[in-house]
Length: 422
Image (tube, rainbow, N blue to C red; front, side, top):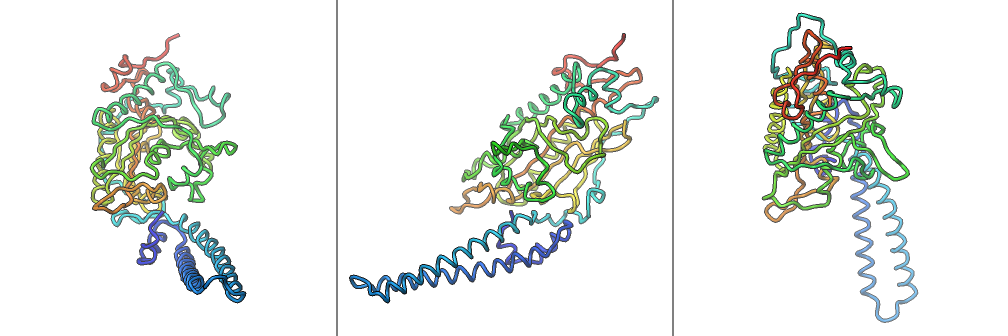
């Protein structure tokens, strides 16, 4: 949630940010009107309470009938105005929820992901002297992926990793998790279900387009997380952190669940867009200084890049434009990896700085010079199952085998996935 003082002092900044994010800027005028009304009601309440105090000091012994009548009238007026005040505040807060984070000044303006900017390309696209297969066809031939059986059992957008495919999947997750743990990041395996109020505080469900993006169990007021961010970022909810402990760095592993509502017909083949996947994620809490948090964002991006280079996967780093930023983000970088089977780069990771947008809802603060301020919160995908798919496609050989990147050998205990011979 943005700071209401920003909207009061710089309404044009907020208005322009909404326009750049492809949102209706009229909400700024609506909130301003409600805020003016709310503050007028507060003045009225304070005046009536002052009158109430003055009247009570006039009581000498038993109050007169006129004094009792006047006190009753003031009490009723206060009650009526407070009801109106509560309704006004609720309306204002609902509209404030719709306002996404203000993009950083250097974020490119664009309508959607098609206008994101590529500013780095790393690695050579592999050249094959044969027609490369995509991960679905190759995985089926090798017996390491089974999408057909998953469709029978679970429906569309599911798949099995099996045999050496399952070992490769676990090797990638283990290697990525341990890589950062050895650098001093604190390991986390968090709950995969959270309360609906906790989900709201993460700042995603306020967006009407994302409200039905998750799986939920209404009877128990629980929501399946779409990323470990949703249960790790709230870990410090309602806390005041010690400045000397920042940055707090967490490396998390969790399964993730996404309904993928509204994406019917998109990426239906294979396992690029599924309802369930595994993920290793970074979450960081920093001091509330954009220079510090933006530097941390670059550090997280560097970890992602280093990992993709070790896995020998060509990729591009993309700066997300305003129209592609998720609601809590002030900036976001994507890593798009090369998929030979699709002859295209596809997103495998992202790295985001959310500033204090989430910490305002979560009430996560740090004491600086005797004053409590909202921390900055960042998230970044270190790796997901998509990287496994990229390994399968990029490292396929003419004989149908798949070479395993060297860094994974200690985790897989095999260097090649060979074709099944009948």
